[in-house]
Image (cartoon, rainbow, N blue to C red; front, side, top):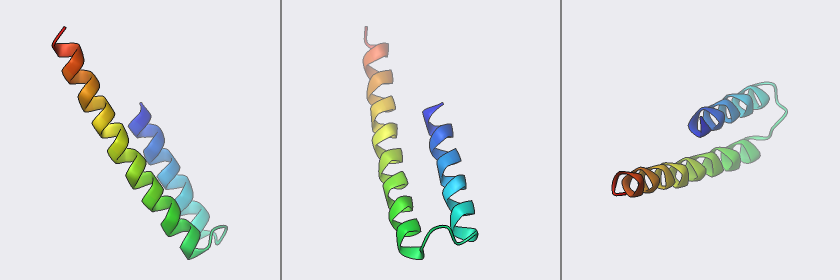
Length: 55
């Protein structure tokens, strides 16, 4: 679910950039932040699954 929300945010930001509501710099910064959050989320999910399977 969290990954889906992240992808939805990515889509909304792309639309905002296409409609010129965001500057190129702000859009690039937001995409970098989304990418970083995606990596952190993936690591969290992986760790949680590993710990849950070892109970």
